[in-house]
Image: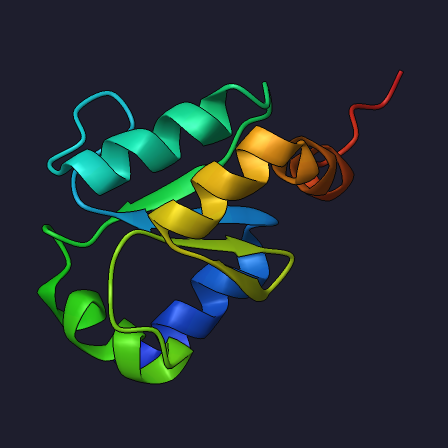
Length: 109
């Protein structure tokens, strides 16, 4: 059985755009998660998410692994981007759209 840290590492490595959040994109369970989802959805690309409320082991271990104490946490291409404030600020100045478009898997034509 893999450890929680290994599971987190697999999730981060396996998803170019990954959001650890409270709730789901359709039903966020906190205002910060809701704001982050809105900013991400405005970019128009698909993203993976993990509901930390259903994964207490990840909720407990991720802040230590990431060295980031709060949720939500946005990970892009294996790197922690940050939480709600950073994501919303990046969305406002156009950086988030660029980052997400570059990270999104390109559809084959």
